[in-house]
Length: 217
Image 1: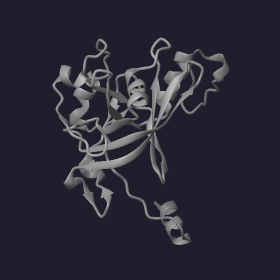
Image 2: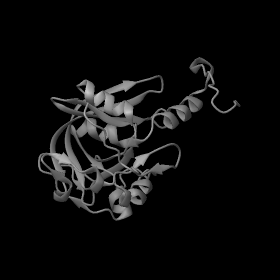
Image 3: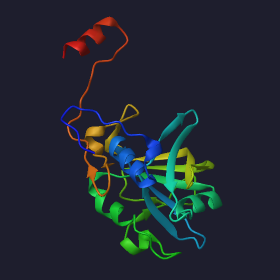
């Protein structure tokens, strides 16, 4: 596919193979936050894996979504563990955690803990048995709200209800997280990640003056 600058290409999903659709999706829906999820495996060891198909879907109750694509038709350890134990912890990845997070995406042998393999320290949770990553500046203890199979492959979609937040003290003021201090890491496509870069504040909308101010910039 070639096009001149500014020209739009029309791409029919019905004419694409699944890998081609994947490349378009992960390149278009960016940047994506990364859920670094801890769960307990059948022998009680901690499984740790990153997922960038991750977002918030509800505030009351607070529910997050983590999508886990299957490997060769087989569910990954994270959804299996979450279903069995009924819980998980979502750790937020920052720039300084990029390399250990990236390393943890490899699939070690069954019942081998990524945290032990990579020397990643853990801290106890409050409301669930599953521990959190000590170095993560934000960790969210969750119970499994539901687990759905979505798509033809399919993928395992985890709906996780937040029960307890661990937030580094310097990151929060008036109940808000300071993005300029958090430095979250974002996933792009392939092996590419991104920092937030320059943060832009816009005036609140809700009256004609604010709308005019935005249009005038």
